[in-house]
Every structure is written in structure tokens, then in C-alpha cells.
Amino acid sequence: MTPTVSQKVPLGALNSLGVSATASHFVEVTERAQLQPAIDWAHQHELDVRVLGGGSNLVLAQTVHALVLAMRLPGREQRAVYDNGDELWRFNAGETWHDTVVFTVEQGLCGLENLALIPGLVGAAPVQNIGAYGVELSDHLVGVEVYDCQLKGWRYLHTADCRLSYRDSLFKQEEGRFVITAIDLLLSRIFSPRLDYGPLKSLAGQSGLTAQQVMEEVIATRQSRLPDPTELPNAGSFFKNPLVDTATRERIMTEWPNLVSFAQEDGLWKLAAGWLIEQAGLKGKHNAQGVGCYEKQALVLVNPLRAGTAAILDWQHHVQARVEDTFGVQLEPEPRFWR
Ligand code: FAD
Ligand code: NAP
Image 1 (cartoon, helix red, strand yellow):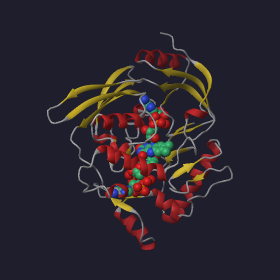
Image 2 (cartoon, protein in one colour):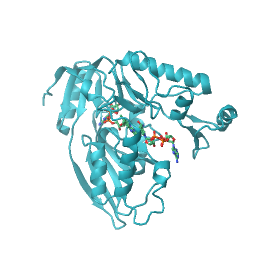
Image 3 (cartoon, rainbow, N blue to C red):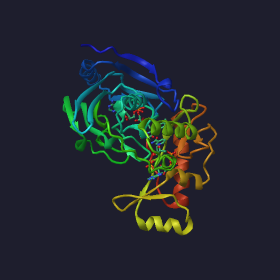
Image 4 (cartoon, rainbow, N blue to C red):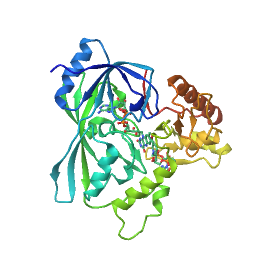
């Protein structure tokens, strides 16, 4: 099968930061059978392969000199029903993540409700082990169907093989090697709510609470706090929450006793990066090209004028320098950079 490759395809509408980039080569993947020929074609033409989902976690260069595979594989399927109320479901990579959450909740399947309204597609969800309000994809992921570009073949990776951790995975560590075509999730008909996070705490103890109600609360909270990328271009949280040891936390707290931090199971402390940026005086501030920190949540970098990568990098470095000067802590960007 010869792939249908388009050239010089605009990506401005395909990335949530609104960078008006162009892909030198582009293929829309709607069937598994297209994948191997497209990857072989890229190798024959000495082009890197880049996998594009919804473009909501990307910082693009002006020209992406690569074969961009836009993953559009649709479909979902029930794979198994167990006596304890668990069900195994497969979702193909091109399904919209939020629609998947809504679908499962409407089916009476619980587990994904805290992960509502995260932009992007199913295939990208394992890449940074998406998480919100105390739930991560890894809590429900059973395995992933991939095409391995290095071994040139199809594989099934169980969750343990995916090296999932806080906003990290095998797919980030070996970027470019795997194309995820489907994910398998274990969901439950028995509702076990996760209500540890502030906005959800008010639901605790409510009799007859449903996954639908939790999902609605998550949606309402997110809509009130986070910018809609179609109105204000952004890529969500731009930095990971830094993990520090106890000595570092105590050092910072001598000067900043209100430091927002959370104990981790491994003895480290997670610092709220948005709080650090806000205290460093950058909430609502921006550079000459308009790139700045969102006025309601400083961790979100916004790009209202659809500036290019240089302006975004300029602001990223400014934020990192200010936080390091103020707290002695380094911030690591969360989105992927296609340079
Ligand atoms: P893309 O941006 O297209 O790609 C991201 C990376 O994944 C790239 O490296 C790409 O090559 C790779 N990739 C994509 N698809 C595949 C595939 N099929 N196979 C292999 N690699 C692939 N993230 C959270 O974790 N929690 C949140 O609460 C959250 N909230 C957000 C809110 C907003 C307003 C925005 C804009 C972003 C938010 N994000 C959040 C970040 C983002 O939505 C997620 O990381 C999401 O999973 C990215 O999906 P995508 O399809 O847009 O991926
Ligand atoms: P928030 O509720 O204001 O919380 C600020 C930070 O404190 C978050 O980063 C969160 O860490 C941490 N936190 C809060 N309560 C916690 C608790 N009980 N236990 C442990 N950590 C706690 O954050 P927000 O910006 O409004 O986002 C809400 C949720 O959506 C968060 O989980 C956040 O990660 C997620 N989100 C992610 C993105 C993204 O692009 N990655 C964008 C928007 C929202 P965690 O981030 O580790 O949860």
C-alpha cells in the first residue's frame, strides 16, 4: 500500500498553542494497515516520524521537517466482563479522550470521571500518563497496542512495560519508537470515588453520589479555572510539579512558610509549580509577544497572539530563571518539543 503523503501541511489549527507551524510531510492514519507502509516510506526518504494526536501537549517549530502521522483510528470495543463488576474495554488511538470518559460514565462504568475534559486523543494518554484530581491513567491501564518502529512490528505492552510514572512513560523516554494504536482499560461497575482534591472534597459523604456527578464537578471546576484553547491558545500546565527532598522543602519553608507541597510515597515532596510561579511574581504577566502566565493559574502558559516558538521559549526560560532565583528549584517543561 503506497501512503498518501501530503506536503507542506499547515499545523496551526492542529496544535492548541496556536503556533502556525508547517509539516513538511503529513499522512492521516485512519486504518492500522496504513501505518507500516507510511513508516517505511519515511525511512526510505530519510525522514523522522512524528506522531500527532490532538496537539494539546506540543510546542512546534516553524517547520516540522518529518513525516507527521495524524492518528485518526476510530473505535471502541468491550473485550471482557468479569464477575466482580470489572470490564475490560479497548479504545482506539483516534478517539477523543473526553468523549471516551463521557461514554464510559454514561455506560455506568466508573474510574475515569476525574479525568474528564483533558484535551487530546486516546493514543496520547499513556505518553505522559495523564492525570488529574488524584487519578492517573495508570490506575486503569491494562496494556497498549503499539507499532514498534525499531523492531518493525506490532507488539502488546502490558502496563508494567510502559514505565508509567508522574507525567512520564516509556513513550517519552524512547520518543519516536512507538506508535500507540489502542489502549485497554479496566473499569468497574462499582463506584469508588476519589475525592482528595480540594474542589471534590465537598462531594465526600454525599449520599447516593454517582460518577456522573463527580464528572460534572470536574468539568465545572476545570471550566472555571482553565482557559479553553480554542479561545486562548495554551498547552495546559507548562511545567511539571518539581519533586524535592525534605531538606530542600525545609530550606524553602524558612523563607516561604506557606509553601504548597504534598508528601509523596517515596519520601520526596511535590511542590505546586503554579504556586512557585505566582510567588515569583509572574501570574498574569507576559512578554512583548504576549506569551505569558494565565491570570487564573500561573502554571498555564498562554499564547493569545499565536506567537511562534521563539517567543514561547523566551517566556519559558524567563519563568525558569525567576523560579530558580527565588526558590533554588528547577522547573522542567511538560509538553513535548518538535524542533
Ligand atoms: P499531542 O499533543 O498530539 O502529542 C503529545 C505527545 O504524545 C507527542 O510527543 C506525540 O508524538 C505523542 N503521541 C500522541 N499520540 C500518540 C500515539 N498515538 N502514539 C505515540 N505517541 C503519541 N494533561 C494531563 O495529564 N492532565 C490534565 O489535566 C491536562 N489538562 C490539560 C488542559 C488543557 C487546557 C490543555 C491544553 C492540556 C492539558 N493536558 C493535561 C495536556 C494534554 O491534554 C495531554 O497530555 C494529552 O494527553 C495530549 O494529547 P494529544 O492527543 O493532544 O497529544
Ligand atoms: P490545583 O487543584 O490548584 O492544585 C495545584 C497543584 O497542587 C496541582 O498541581 C496538584 O498536583 C497539587 N494538589 C492539589 N491538591 C492535591 C492533593 N490533595 N494531593 C496531591 N496533590 C495535590 O490544580 P489545577 O491547576 O486546578 O489542576 C487540577 C488538576 O488537573 C490537577 O491534578 C492537575 O494536575 C490537572 N491539570 C493538569 C494539566 C496539565 O496540562 N498537565 C492542566 C490542567 C490541570 P498534580 O498536578 O500532581 O495533581
